[in-house]
Image (cartoon, rainbow, N blue to C red):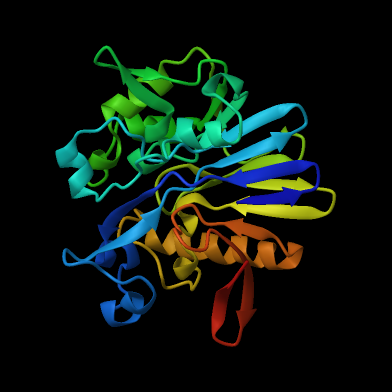
Length: 280
């Protein structure tokens, strides 16, 4: 799936699916509502996509997030219903004619296992970074949250994912909102889901795209009350969603929804009932 934002060609990759509890994904929203659009399985889990993005332009190949990866055992994969055979990050890049060595930069929105697991693989029993030529951009405050997690979110930060990434000599810390990290590409720090997650804004030749990460993981999460039980600061994310969505409407921007396995691209609209997604 590809969109063109000015000089930037954005490929929305398909690194398979996984499953999380539907109640946790929609917080206080009743199952009778969310189950209509996101039907639960017999374990009350809903299917979620894994949609990293590859941005090509300006002499760079920029990877945003890496999916869940394929290095975990059958028991762990079964718990999360991982289905990514033939769709590893390496395989998805290969379909476009690239290898990990071709990637110039990696933007990590945050270090939860479903966003950074694909950057590494086991080599001789050791988790190893695959992208050795890439500068890696992580929010400094989020790095601190990842290495010293709370009891509530510790399970989201896995050592085999974090250690190789954070040990990279090409790791670069970002401090809050950062405009034009690359020409027309900015990073925006948000704090509702987890401390110092970063959304990615791509602007070129009058067009815009927003990689929202877990600010709105699927198009079903566009209505403001539809926020996750996983969000550490729910009232903060309420205000962040409003601010981002108003900005996106004003710019007629395309939203990239990282965990939507059916409709990862949509614009935002608003009527008397509130915000909603217009799927592309």
